[in-house]
Amino acid sequence: MTQQRRNKLAVIGAGNAGCITALHFNYYQPDLEIDLYHDSENHPIELVGQGTTIPVAELLSLALDSNWFDNKIGATLKTGILYKNWGKKKDQIFHDFCSMGNVSIHYTPKKLSDAVLSSGKFNVIEQEITDPEKEIDADFIIDCRGRKARDKDNLDTIINPINSVLLASLPKKEMLWTEAQATPNGWTFVVPTEDKLSLGYLYNADLTSKEEATKDFQERFGVKEIEHSMKFDNYCSFNPFVGERTLLNGNQCAFIEPLEATATGLYLFIARVGYDRFINKFEIPQCLQILHKEVNSIANFVLWHYKTGSKFNSSFWNHVKTLPFTPIEQPIQGEMYGQWMKPSFEIWENNT
Image 1 (cartoon, rainbow, N blue to C red):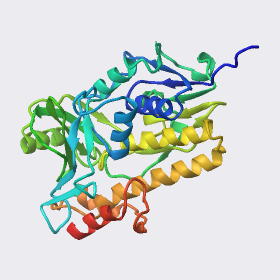
Image 2: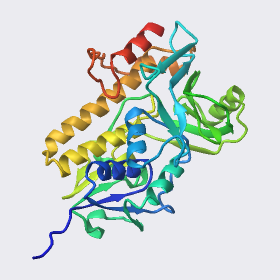
Image 3: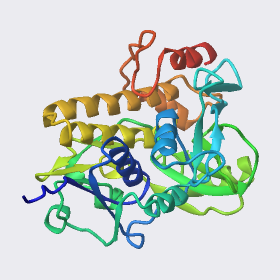
Image 4: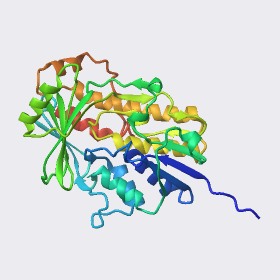
C-alpha cells in the first residue's frame, strides 16, 4: 500500500511574520510538513527591537520552548506602554495589560529568526524565491518576503499621520515597559532590549524635513548617530490570497505604524486566517471579511490615540485634526475590538 504524503506548507521568509506563521502552524498542526525558506541577503531581518502583546508571547513560549531561564530570543519583560506627553490631562499614561498578572515581552528579531531556523522543527532552505507558485512544491504557501515584494496595485491605503522613521539606539537601561513619547513632529518609541535601548522617531515627512526630525531626535533624546531612516506607507492588501495556493503575510499583506505594538499580533492573526483557509477550509470571502475587520479595528484604534491630541501645538498635531475618523463603538465587557478589551478604552479616555 502506498503511504499517503503529508500535506506540506511552505513559508517564505524568516523575519517576524515568517517565524510567527511557521510556529503557529507547527504548534497547532504538528504533523504538517513545513519548508521554511529564507534569504538573508535580499530580505534582511528588521534592525529594530520589537515589542509585542500577550498572544505572541504565549506562542513564542509554547511553540519555541522558550522561557525566562532558557531565553532563546533575547526577551525582556514588557508590562505595558508608558505614554508621555499624550492627551491634555496627565503628563504620563500607563497602558498595561489590565492586570499585574498579565505581561508580554520585547525581543530581538534577529535572535527570534536564529532560534526558529535552528529549532529543528522545519525544513530550512536558504534560497531566494521570486515566483512562489512556480518555484515551490507545496500544498499551500504563506509568503512573508516583506515590503520589497509588495504588489502596489493590491494595496489599500490606511489613514494615519505617520510616514517616516529615524532609528537609533542608546545604552541599555532597565525598563519594564515600552515608552511612547509624543513630540512636536509625531512620537518616539523606546524599546528596552537585552543589550540596548532601541529608539524610533516617527514623523510625517510632508510636514517635517528629515533634517528637522534628526535635530529634534538628537536634542530631545540625546541620540548621537542615526542608524537607519526610511519612509513608509500604511496599507492593507485588498486580497492577500493570490494565485491558487498562496497567502501574503507580514509587510506584503499589511503595515500599520508601530503605536501600540500591533505588528506581530497582526501577523499572528493573519496566520490564523491562513489556518482557517488552508486547514479548516473556510471560503476566501469569509477569510477576507475577518481579516479586514481586524485591520480596520487596529488602524482606527491607533488613529484614535492621535485624535485625543498631545501637549504640543504644532503643524503635525494640527494636521491630525483634519484626518477623517470613524468613532469607535467600544466593546462590552469580555469582548474584543481588534487587539483590545474595554479596560484599554477606559484607560485612555480617563487619562487624556
